Figure 1 (cartoon, helix red, strand yellow):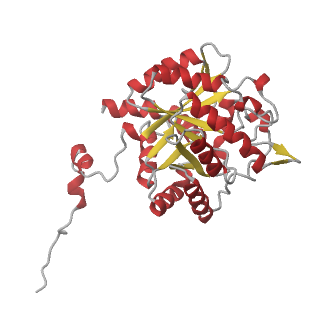
Figure 2: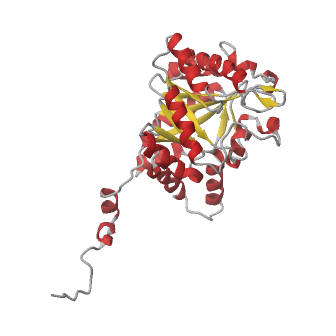
Length: 332
């Protein structure tokens, strides 16, 4: 018998009647534990410096960095990623400063871990902050040499592990470097040091403000990193890159950038079921901050952007807005 009904049995709007109901049935929840705050620490700096292309983000001298980390932990964020800003006089064509014992960043990490022993500290492994040409490796005959670069990355990784970094994060995209670093860790009693591989790092135009922050933009000029970073056109290649790094010993994999590559985040997490991080990079952060400051977008768009990254499959997110968003979550 046909029953005439004016309204459907299912009304999805029933579950949207108020905020508490919406939160109760939320499929994705962003928490403070999902956030990692990058921090720039500058050699020979006393105090702080603003970064023109990154609103509300600064370079810190070591003493000020410790104060900032206190604020970060107070906000509820328990993980940081440390990036060095090297004095130009200490840069050369091989990035030699990166492999000096007790160099600036390793002593900074020691100071941080002494004051904040429980914080999860991620140390970046790449040569671009240390080279006078701004590339992530050694240039031989006009090209970044993969195998010669790996030799330095191994040394750099061991120095950072020795300094107390909990997670070593090679961001250079050299082929095979995860396997060699893992092998070196096993031989040198760093079996428990975690490797976070920037496994799918795309050659992106969203990195500009970061390069300003670490002082490599003027060094690299118009040169391209496309010979070692992934093409933005490729998806299946990301699967191959990630599979290779997992097989070589990566504990966690990273996709970078985040919002323009949500499909890659979802694909990697769905395919490998391994801890998967995403980096909301400087260009993503700065364009949202500029739009917010101009009144073009509501300030809540930052939180929305991070939820979209989590929804795509990221287990944790590196974002310059980590402290800010964590305070919002804390006060909600």
